[in-house]
Image (cartoon, rainbow, N blue to C red; front, side, top):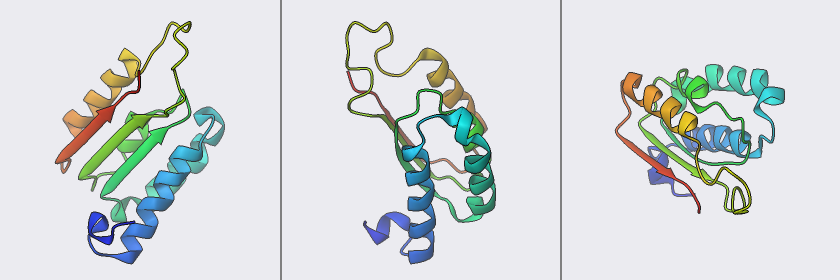
Amino acid sequence: MKLEDHGFSFKIAFLEIYIERMLENCQSYNQDRLKIIEAVKVLSPWIFTVEIKINAPDLNIEEICKYLYNLIHLKIRCSEGKNLDYKKKIIGMKFTEARDIAEMMKSAQNLVTSHLCSWF
């Protein structure tokens, strides 16, 4: 952990890492939705940076980020093992996911940087 990535605040670093781990450990967004949304709503005043690796195929980034009104930096990657089977029809990020993230970015007031990475 680099403290400078979290505004040189241990409290903010702890809360941002807590949200990141919650999102990364989510295997089914539909099952964990209420818990995730509640945590994001409560912690949103202290969340400025989010860097996550998506493991749940149904994770709704747009719904989550609309509560993160102080978000300045967003980095999203697909899990390394996700979608590497070329027999599957979907490789990388779905167009609907990209569209939802783009809509969220349009309405973001403080977002300065974003990185969207997909493994192929």
